[in-house]
Image (cartoon, rainbow, N blue to C red):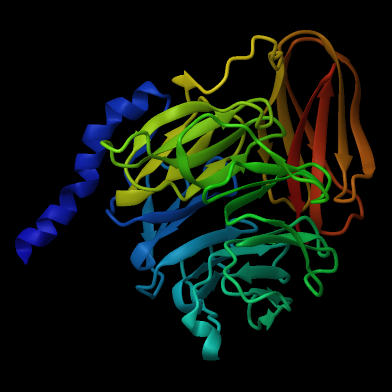
Length: 418
């Protein structure tokens, strides 16, 4: 028995040593999680503060960008599947057998608010909150709370397994599992949009949704689900597990690859800089699945996976091979480098870079696509800029900041809380 525990104790260190050179070559750095369990989800509220959850009730927390990960006590040994915070204090975790945990002190204490009765036999896979009161979670069904998770009501959806839930405001949201559904009245009614066995979904604007899953090409809709398009790929992907966009053009996805019958399946991480038209490999080989990717901007991000793996990049990940070559793609000559804090309450700071003198427009839009404020509309010289937006008498919810330079555009989602 002692030898068994000694073997498991050195697994994270062995993985760190053997993978350091491989990941370093592709712009990623292995961070020390201190555990050997599978990690399922990572969520950052800014460049420093994050939570990671995984098997056997594991919760990790950092306040320095992952330089040090500290364990938090969950009070359970059930698997934890997803984590979501609206600020540095208030957050939720969902997991196996109907488990739901909440905290109001950044995770120092977690309170069990699990579903009871028959629903407890089903796993919960995702959670999303608009503010400290209104939120949704999904598993065998979709559930809504209006009191921070003290009480949950089942929404009238077809009984199937839902893996993703996300809303742009109190009315409009999406749920994804064996089929992707959309609601425009907070979940009272749902309309089926497309049949795809979805593993991951990402809302990248008011009407833009990316989705990936088993045995399907990545798909995208630009008109709120009226039409869906395939995103081309040339890789032998068995399944896609996660998709995340840091801007309107820059995104990341992970897939399980099976190149030939002699080689075991392994995961790769791919990146797009043209909204999904082409994908480039940034990590070539990782054992096991990659269930979660999170970027706070186009350069700084993390991925988590098996054996306590946490990888961080500050370069957006270096491209080591390409799935397509298009010499006509225009280089992007501007980029948000940080939007913080997000979510926010009174003000949010936007920082961006211009590589040459350009006329620039920055506007704030609501979830319906209406411009509510223009922050900048003038020519600026090359350099790094920082501006602060203070919303006036606006309700809590999801907003979007759009930066336009010439024919190029970048969009970021902002979450205004009460």
